[in-house]
Length: 227
Length: 77
Image (cartoon, rainbow over all chains, first blue to last red; front, side, top):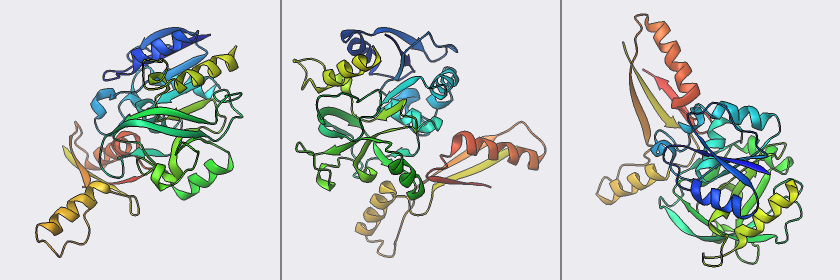
Protein backbone atom coordinates (compact mmCIF):
# COMPACT_ATOMS: atom_id res chain seq x y z
CA UNK A 1 0.00 0.00 0.00
CA UNK A 2 1.32 3.41 -0.97
CA UNK A 3 0.82 6.48 1.16
CA UNK A 4 1.88 10.10 0.86
CA UNK A 5 2.35 12.65 3.64
CA UNK A 6 2.14 16.31 2.62
CA UNK A 7 4.68 18.63 4.26
CA UNK A 8 3.70 22.26 4.69
CA UNK A 9 6.04 24.88 6.13
CA UNK A 10 5.32 24.54 9.86
CA UNK A 11 4.16 20.91 9.78
CA UNK A 12 5.78 19.12 12.71
CA UNK A 13 4.12 15.70 12.87
CA UNK A 14 5.07 14.72 9.31
CA UNK A 15 8.07 12.59 10.32
CA UNK A 16 6.18 10.86 13.15
CA UNK A 17 3.47 10.01 10.63
CA UNK A 18 6.09 8.73 8.17
CA UNK A 19 7.57 6.47 10.88
CA UNK A 20 4.11 5.20 11.88
CA UNK A 21 2.97 4.47 8.31
CA UNK A 22 6.19 2.60 7.49
CA UNK A 23 6.09 0.64 10.75
CA UNK A 24 2.71 -0.82 9.79
CA UNK A 25 3.62 -1.60 6.20
CA UNK A 26 2.86 1.44 4.10
CA UNK A 27 5.32 2.40 1.39
CA UNK A 28 5.30 6.09 2.30
CA UNK A 29 6.54 9.13 0.41
CA UNK A 30 6.82 12.73 1.56
CA UNK A 31 5.31 15.38 -0.73
CA UNK A 32 6.26 19.07 -0.60
CA UNK A 33 3.47 21.67 -0.51
CA UNK A 34 4.81 23.46 -3.60
CA UNK A 35 4.47 20.34 -5.75
CA UNK A 36 1.41 20.22 -7.94
CA UNK A 37 1.07 16.48 -8.55
CA UNK A 38 0.56 13.67 -6.09
CA UNK A 39 2.44 10.39 -6.47
CA UNK A 40 0.18 7.36 -6.97
CA UNK A 41 -1.19 6.74 -3.48
CA UNK A 42 -3.75 4.62 -1.65
CA UNK A 43 -3.79 7.10 1.24
CA UNK A 44 -2.94 10.81 1.52
CA UNK A 45 -2.16 12.20 4.98
CA UNK A 46 -2.25 15.85 6.00
CA UNK A 47 -0.14 15.87 9.18
CA UNK A 48 -0.32 17.88 12.38
CA UNK A 49 1.63 21.02 13.10
CA UNK A 50 1.28 24.73 12.53
CA UNK A 51 1.17 25.09 8.75
CA UNK A 52 2.16 28.60 7.67
CA UNK A 53 2.44 29.57 11.34
CA UNK A 54 -1.34 29.25 11.79
CA UNK A 55 -1.58 32.71 10.17
CA UNK A 56 -5.07 34.11 9.49
CA UNK A 57 -6.87 30.95 10.72
CA UNK A 58 -5.42 27.51 11.41
CA UNK A 59 -5.17 25.63 8.12
CA UNK A 60 -6.48 28.50 5.96
CA UNK A 61 -3.25 29.21 4.05
CA UNK A 62 -2.46 25.50 3.58
CA UNK A 63 -6.00 25.19 2.25
CA UNK A 64 -4.92 27.39 -0.69
CA UNK A 65 -1.45 25.85 -1.25
CA UNK A 66 -0.27 24.52 -4.62
CA UNK A 67 -0.61 20.82 -3.75
CA UNK A 68 -4.07 21.18 -2.26
CA UNK A 69 -5.92 21.20 -5.60
CA UNK A 70 -4.54 17.72 -6.33
CA UNK A 71 -5.57 16.59 -2.82
CA UNK A 72 -9.10 17.93 -3.39
CA UNK A 73 -9.31 16.21 -6.77
CA UNK A 74 -8.01 12.94 -5.24
CA UNK A 75 -10.50 13.16 -2.37
CA UNK A 76 -13.42 13.95 -4.66
CA UNK A 77 -12.60 10.93 -6.80
CA UNK A 78 -12.99 8.75 -3.69
CA UNK A 79 -9.33 8.51 -2.56
CA UNK A 80 -8.62 8.14 1.15
CA UNK A 81 -7.51 11.37 2.81
CA UNK A 82 -6.64 11.45 6.52
CA UNK A 83 -6.08 14.77 8.29
CA UNK A 84 -4.71 14.77 11.83
CA UNK A 85 -4.95 17.87 14.03
CA UNK A 86 -3.75 20.70 11.76
CA UNK A 87 -4.58 18.34 8.88
CA UNK A 88 -8.19 18.24 10.16
CA UNK A 89 -8.21 22.06 10.30
CA UNK A 90 -6.94 22.16 6.69
CA UNK A 91 -9.68 19.76 5.56
CA UNK A 92 -12.39 22.01 7.04
CA UNK A 93 -10.80 25.09 5.47
CA UNK A 94 -10.83 23.47 2.03
CA UNK A 95 -14.50 22.59 2.48
CA UNK A 96 -13.78 18.85 2.11
CA UNK A 97 -15.14 18.42 5.64
CA UNK A 98 -17.98 20.47 7.13
CA UNK A 99 -17.63 22.79 10.12
CA UNK A 100 -14.67 24.52 11.68
CA UNK A 101 -12.17 24.07 14.54
CA UNK A 102 -12.37 27.05 16.85
CA UNK A 103 -10.12 28.03 19.72
CA UNK A 104 -10.44 25.74 22.75
CA UNK A 105 -13.25 26.85 25.05
CA UNK A 106 -11.00 27.67 28.02
CA UNK A 107 -8.33 29.42 25.89
CA UNK A 108 -5.58 26.99 26.76
CA UNK A 109 -3.30 24.82 24.66
CA UNK A 110 -4.17 21.23 25.63
CA UNK A 111 -1.51 18.52 25.52
CA UNK A 112 -2.58 15.23 27.11
CA UNK A 113 -3.89 11.73 26.54
CA UNK A 114 -7.63 11.40 26.04
CA UNK A 115 -10.05 8.59 25.30
CA UNK A 116 -12.12 8.59 22.14
CA UNK A 117 -15.02 6.39 21.19
CA UNK A 118 -15.38 5.12 17.65
CA UNK A 119 -18.89 5.95 16.48
CA UNK A 120 -18.99 4.39 13.06
CA UNK A 121 -17.27 1.31 11.69
CA UNK A 122 -18.86 1.22 8.23
CA UNK A 123 -15.79 2.79 6.64
CA UNK A 124 -12.23 1.95 5.57
CA UNK A 125 -10.68 3.51 8.67
CA UNK A 126 -12.48 1.69 11.46
CA UNK A 127 -14.04 -1.43 9.91
CA UNK A 128 -13.00 -4.52 11.97
CA UNK A 129 -11.24 -2.41 14.63
CA UNK A 130 -10.72 -4.52 17.75
CA UNK A 131 -11.34 -1.79 20.34
CA UNK A 132 -14.25 0.62 20.55
CA UNK A 133 -12.46 3.07 22.86
CA UNK A 134 -8.93 4.21 22.08
CA UNK A 135 -6.53 6.17 24.25
CA UNK A 136 -4.83 8.76 22.02
CA UNK A 137 -2.87 11.97 22.43
CA UNK A 138 -4.13 15.46 21.70
CA UNK A 139 -2.03 18.64 21.45
CA UNK A 140 -3.89 21.67 20.14
CA UNK A 141 -5.12 25.18 20.76
CA UNK A 142 -7.92 25.08 18.16
CA UNK A 143 -9.82 21.82 18.48
CA UNK A 144 -13.22 23.08 19.48
CA UNK A 145 -15.39 21.64 16.70
CA UNK A 146 -18.32 23.77 15.63
CA UNK A 147 -20.89 23.73 12.84
CA UNK A 148 -24.37 25.15 12.30
CA UNK A 149 -27.35 23.24 13.67
CA UNK A 150 -28.49 22.44 10.10
CA UNK A 151 -25.04 21.05 9.28
CA UNK A 152 -24.99 19.05 12.52
CA UNK A 153 -28.27 17.43 11.62
CA UNK A 154 -26.87 16.38 8.22
CA UNK A 155 -23.69 15.04 9.85
CA UNK A 156 -25.68 13.04 12.40
CA UNK A 157 -28.19 11.75 9.84
CA UNK A 158 -25.33 10.49 7.64
CA UNK A 159 -23.39 8.97 10.59
CA UNK A 160 -20.44 11.24 9.79
CA UNK A 161 -19.31 11.62 13.41
CA UNK A 162 -16.23 9.39 13.44
CA UNK A 163 -14.88 9.70 16.98
CA UNK A 164 -16.03 11.50 20.12
CA UNK A 165 -14.19 12.39 23.33
CA UNK A 166 -15.21 10.13 26.20
CA UNK A 167 -13.93 8.84 29.53
CA UNK A 168 -12.17 5.49 29.79
CA UNK A 169 -15.51 3.72 30.14
CA UNK A 170 -16.90 5.30 27.00
CA UNK A 171 -19.15 7.96 28.54
CA UNK A 172 -19.28 11.12 26.44
CA UNK A 173 -20.12 14.09 28.67
CA UNK A 174 -18.87 17.58 29.58
CA UNK A 175 -16.21 16.15 31.90
CA UNK A 176 -14.68 14.15 29.09
CA UNK A 177 -14.84 17.04 26.61
CA UNK A 178 -11.39 18.69 26.68
CA UNK A 179 -11.99 21.65 24.39
CA UNK A 180 -15.69 22.46 24.23
CA UNK A 181 -16.26 20.62 20.94
CA UNK A 182 -19.88 20.38 19.82
CA UNK A 183 -21.29 16.96 20.83
CA UNK A 184 -17.77 15.95 22.01
CA UNK A 185 -16.76 15.62 18.35
CA UNK A 186 -13.08 14.66 17.99
CA UNK A 187 -13.25 13.59 14.34
CA UNK A 188 -15.64 13.52 11.40
CA UNK A 189 -15.97 11.99 7.94
CA UNK A 190 -17.25 13.45 4.71
CA UNK A 191 -20.49 11.99 3.44
CA UNK A 192 -18.75 9.16 1.52
CA UNK A 193 -16.42 8.39 4.47
CA UNK A 194 -13.25 8.39 2.38
CA UNK A 195 -12.08 11.57 4.12
CA UNK A 196 -11.40 11.51 7.88
CA UNK A 197 -10.29 14.47 9.97
CA UNK A 198 -9.54 14.08 13.66
CA UNK A 199 -7.77 16.04 16.38
CA UNK A 200 -6.13 13.07 18.24
CA UNK A 201 -2.73 11.85 17.04
CA UNK A 202 -2.60 8.06 16.52
CA UNK A 203 0.99 8.41 15.21
CA UNK A 204 2.11 9.38 18.72
CA UNK A 205 0.92 6.11 20.27
CA UNK A 206 2.67 3.40 18.29
CA UNK A 207 5.44 2.20 20.57
CA UNK A 208 5.64 0.72 24.05
CA UNK A 209 8.15 3.43 24.97
CA UNK A 210 5.58 6.13 24.19
CA UNK A 211 2.60 6.76 26.47
CA UNK A 212 0.45 4.07 24.89
CA UNK A 213 0.02 1.86 21.86
CA UNK A 214 -3.59 2.39 20.80
CA UNK A 215 -2.33 4.24 17.71
CA UNK A 216 -0.91 0.90 16.57
CA UNK A 217 -4.43 -0.55 16.62
CA UNK A 218 -5.58 2.26 14.30
CA UNK A 219 -2.77 1.82 11.74
CA UNK A 220 -2.78 -2.01 11.80
CA UNK A 221 -6.51 -1.99 11.23
CA UNK A 222 -6.31 0.63 8.46
CA UNK A 223 -3.70 -1.21 6.40
CA UNK A 224 -5.58 -4.47 7.03
CA UNK A 225 -8.70 -2.90 5.53
CA UNK A 226 -6.81 -1.62 2.50
CA UNK A 227 -4.96 -4.87 1.65
CA UNK B 1 -6.56 52.32 -3.57
CA UNK B 2 -6.91 51.19 0.01
CA UNK B 3 -9.84 49.00 1.04
CA UNK B 4 -10.56 48.12 4.64
CA UNK B 5 -12.18 44.89 5.79
CA UNK B 6 -13.52 43.93 9.19
CA UNK B 7 -14.14 40.26 9.93
CA UNK B 8 -16.25 39.39 12.95
CA UNK B 9 -17.72 36.24 14.42
CA UNK B 10 -21.35 35.65 13.53
CA UNK B 11 -23.95 36.23 16.21
CA UNK B 12 -24.35 33.17 18.38
CA UNK B 13 -20.84 31.83 17.73
CA UNK B 14 -18.90 31.42 20.96
CA UNK B 15 -16.08 33.97 21.35
CA UNK B 16 -14.01 32.89 24.37
CA UNK B 17 -11.41 35.62 23.81
CA UNK B 18 -14.09 38.31 23.72
CA UNK B 19 -15.59 36.83 26.89
CA UNK B 20 -12.20 36.86 28.67
CA UNK B 21 -11.65 40.49 27.63
CA UNK B 22 -15.12 41.44 28.87
CA UNK B 23 -14.53 39.75 32.24
CA UNK B 24 -11.14 41.48 32.58
CA UNK B 25 -12.69 44.86 31.80
CA UNK B 26 -15.39 44.20 34.41
CA UNK B 27 -12.70 43.21 36.91
CA UNK B 28 -10.85 46.48 36.19
CA UNK B 29 -13.93 48.40 37.20
CA UNK B 30 -15.53 48.96 33.79
CA UNK B 31 -18.80 47.64 35.15
CA UNK B 32 -20.92 48.86 32.26
CA UNK B 33 -19.27 46.52 29.71
CA UNK B 34 -21.87 43.88 28.84
CA UNK B 35 -20.25 42.04 25.97
CA UNK B 36 -17.04 42.12 23.89
CA UNK B 37 -16.73 40.45 20.48
CA UNK B 38 -13.24 40.29 19.04
CA UNK B 39 -12.63 40.55 15.30
CA UNK B 40 -9.97 41.10 12.64
CA UNK B 41 -9.14 44.17 10.58
CA UNK B 42 -7.43 44.15 7.16
CA UNK B 43 -5.96 47.11 5.26
CA UNK B 44 -5.70 46.04 1.62
CA UNK B 45 -3.74 48.14 -0.88
CA UNK B 46 -5.11 47.17 -4.28
CA UNK B 47 -3.89 48.21 -7.71
CA UNK B 48 -7.27 49.37 -9.01
CA UNK B 49 -8.68 52.87 -9.63
CA UNK B 50 -12.36 51.98 -9.85
CA UNK B 51 -13.78 51.70 -6.33
CA UNK B 52 -16.68 49.45 -7.33
CA UNK B 53 -14.32 47.02 -9.07
CA UNK B 54 -11.87 47.13 -6.17
CA UNK B 55 -14.58 46.36 -3.62
CA UNK B 56 -15.95 43.58 -5.76
CA UNK B 57 -12.48 41.97 -5.88
CA UNK B 58 -12.09 42.35 -2.12
CA UNK B 59 -15.50 40.76 -1.61
CA UNK B 60 -14.27 37.75 -3.59
CA UNK B 61 -11.13 37.65 -1.41
CA UNK B 62 -13.26 37.73 1.73
CA UNK B 63 -15.39 34.82 0.56
CA UNK B 64 -12.42 32.73 -0.57
CA UNK B 65 -9.83 33.43 2.12
CA UNK B 66 -10.17 36.33 4.56
CA UNK B 67 -13.32 35.07 6.30
CA UNK B 68 -14.53 31.59 7.11
CA UNK B 69 -18.22 31.94 6.34
CA UNK B 70 -19.14 29.03 8.62
CA UNK B 71 -18.50 31.24 11.65
CA UNK B 72 -17.54 34.72 10.39
CA UNK B 73 -19.15 37.72 8.68
CA UNK B 74 -17.21 40.42 6.83
CA UNK B 75 -17.77 44.10 6.22
CA UNK B 76 -15.97 46.09 3.51
CA UNK B 77 -15.50 49.75 4.45
